[in-house]
Image (cartoon, rainbow, N blue to C red; front, side, top):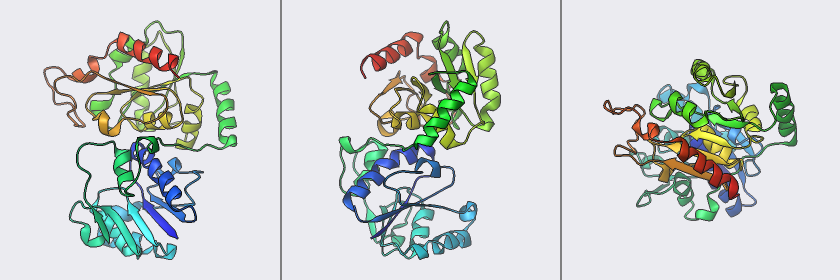
Length: 330
């Protein structure tokens, strides 16, 4: 059986889709699973034991009807028996329809049921996104929702050598940045949390965040922080993350990655809804002050009186306790 999975477009969501892929393989052990996704999230699925093939959507697939049609037709050669979409977009369902897949499964959203052979009603109540994906299979439990990212021995060996070049042994990973300004950790809080620390920190981010990294390092001039923002590919960054002592993460994709790698991960939530999108792993904890305006679920903080109060309220003691409890209770 040929099975397709149209995967989410964001790194964190892609990581949260991994339990679905894993469960799909359990249900169809003889099936061939094809991941269909954007190039930006494809590295999440590289070398995964359940992913037989990865098809990257053309960059033009969002450019209107003809591009959507072309993207769908390009998948016809896969001869898919069943095609699942884990996104709720109209576009993904249209691409599935043009793919010619015999069975097309997804949630009944955005009036797209005309393209689906099985339009599933949304589960009632709030649930974690991993469980929402698993519900499409009408199976899955809390025990099934832990994601796993696969690395090769060569990737790990490369990361060990790279840390030596950087002069680091077992640094602490910092993921303070987010595409949403409401989820980006304020520099003054990081400085307060880390003040006096003798640990080495390694700062992750994209090329677009290099200036933010420079400002953060300047503000924290008494702390050993090395920025690798924009220096490595996503797979290379994942390999380095796998060797870190633990991670301090905002509500972002990198926090999901470190958690999936089994790295102790402390995630700071404010505007986001941790019940639905917290990182999953065997060694994770959430710091969330649950202030009066949280979770607003906005990308920009509109609290003019107390900007980013949800993150500003997180104290040094909160962070120290979270780290201590996580490391003492493996």
